[in-house]
Every structure is written in C-alpha cells, then in structure tokens.
View 1 (cartoon, rainbow, N blue to C red):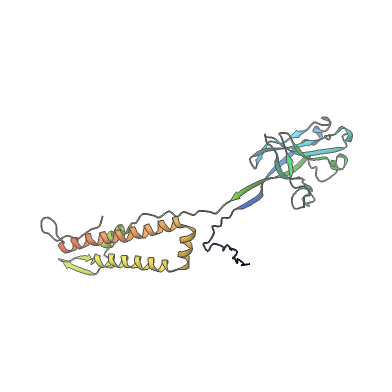
View 2: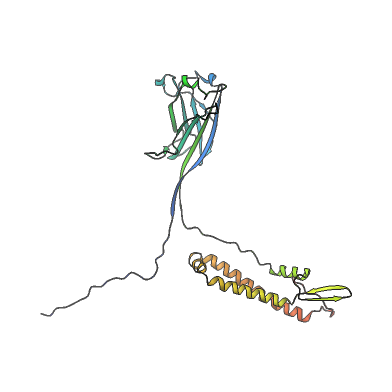
Length: 293
C-alpha cells in the first residue's frame, strides 16, 4: 500500500509592524475648602434637637456644598448631650463620590484641632457616595457639649470650623497632538533694515561729503538660501527626524513647507536684486539706492 505523505501548513507572523495605541485613565480628587465661623454659640443653644445652623453654599468639583451644625444634636436619642456636624450636598447630583474632612479649630493657637478626615487613610469601601441633594456625611456625636463649652475650641462665644471636600473625578487621556504655529517670514524687512542702516555693507561711496553704504545683496540672499538648505539636510539626518516622521507627520509637513517657503522667497528676492543692482537707475537715468519693500 502506498503511503501518502503531506506537510502541515504553518502560519508565520506578519513582518509588518502592527499599530499600537495607548490611553491612560486618571482618577483624582478636586479639592476645595470652606471656613465656617459660628458667632453667638450660647444664643444658638436650645433651638431644638434636629435643628441646624447652615453655612453659605460653596462650590467644589462642579457641585454646591454646605456645612450643617446642630447645637442640640441631630438625634433625639442623644438628648442634646452632643453637638452634631455634617457636610451636605446642596445641589442636584447622582452618585457624587467624594472625600471629606471636618475640623473644629483650637482657638488657643496650640494647634490641638479636632479632626475627622477621609484623607490620608485607607478606605475599605472607597470614597463616600452621595446620591441626591441633601445627602450628608458627618457625625451625630461630633463633640460632647459639656466638654465643648469648657474647651479652647470655644472662644468669645464663637466656634471656628474648617471643611475640606475632595470630589472624585475620572478621565481618560489619549496621545497628545502637538501643533506649532509657524510665524510668517520677515526676511525682506531685515534686508531693508540692513540697506537703511549700512551695517555689514560691502561697498561705501562718498560724494560731496555724503557717504552711501551698499550691500552686493545677491550674495547675502544666496548665503541665506545655502544655510537653509544645509540646516534642512542636517535635520533630516538626525534620529529625531525619523521619530518626528513616524509620530507627528502633520508637524513635519508644516516644518518642511516653512523651509520651502523660505528658500522660494530667497530665490525670488535674489532674482529681483539682480535686476535692481545691474540697472541701478530710475526713469531719469539717475543713480538711486535700491530698497526692499
């Protein structure tokens, strides 16, 4: 019996480089602060459990917030033994994720502040989420009232509270596209200034005590053109040029067009300079000094 031998086909990876794109997701907090001073604390006592004094609203991360202070506490079960302190969402929002910090300032200047903070500590469930206007984060038993009234936190019948809100924001960034604005060429203006000032002149004429400075303008333009071409070649031979060609083709096109315009302008100006310098006279056959406009 004849045996038929065959070969199993194998696929080879393409030698062409595959396109690779990248993006980065960034999650961070947008932080904002608000100082809330409560003056006349003793007059606020006895206003009732569940009743509060509110700060002015302030904006952080595109949302409005407010501080709520309860002189007689927020919960009836505490029987007005504690003051309560909360931060509340004061604008419409859905699932606003944020970090909070509430600080009762020590007014003795010894820096012994009472601080409750989400910041700089590990959070098992992540940032706090507020789902609707009026959602709050804070403490029903922020401070025992009898201790507060004999402490350095109360001075001249005033309390000072500082609040920090850090709204969590996420965004995704792709590769950045750079664009360089190329200024228009002003080489003709510079040549005109040279002719006017006489700086760098090649020939000087003195007639009746008046001195005229002349530029063999053609050589200056030709030198500029040569330098532009030399710089173009030097740039094309660098590794940076190859990287620019691959990563930013639009920028490369702008640069090459700019160089081409300079060379073209120099050639045209050079031709104009020949006619002017070879003739060197006006319609009345008087010798005149050529100018660039």
